[in-house]
Length: 205
Image 1 (cartoon, rainbow, N blue to C red):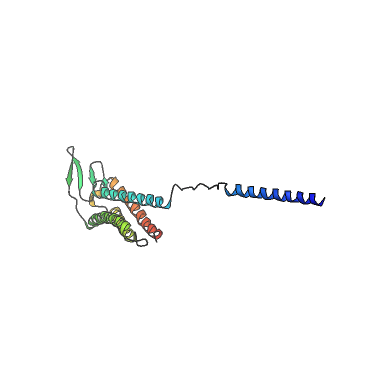
Image 2 (cartoon, rainbow, N blue to C red; image 1 turned 45 degrees about the vertical axis):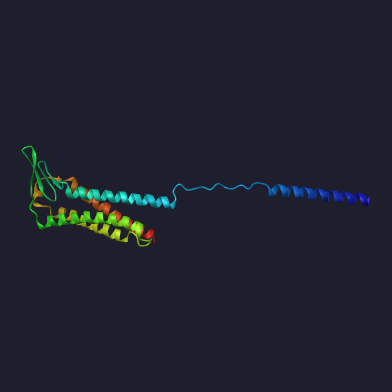
């Protein structure tokens, strides 16, 4: 009886050892499952590139609007007269005839600030591109934002002075033309750009 019990115990222990060895063997060769790596469609680099591209497009748009507002003859218009910052066009004999306008000090101030607004807007664009590739982070866009803010102030002064004290040729019954409207739209865009450059400067620190 004792020998049979001992043999039965040894048989059970040998089975357990075989089962444990087989379990370890199968576990050591089982392939490990890896979770797929998800790549975000909008990485920080792509977001930065899209932001800079949008800023450039907005900057170019503001420059184009400033130039159109400064050179087109539609600040004050009537049925027969169209006036800009530089002259007066009258409709006579089926033709537009150019005549010079009297240049009071107020109109000269509008002319000067309009030209300065265009100059500072163009200069700030070149400075923006130069700082983007030359200056380290934390020092970018500061000077660009200052130039853009000066352009914003210049176009605001030009439109405000023209609104408060229009030239004598605009005393005729008429309305403000699209150049006047473009000047105010340019003011809004240049102000938005100035704030944007300051925000980008903070993010680059």
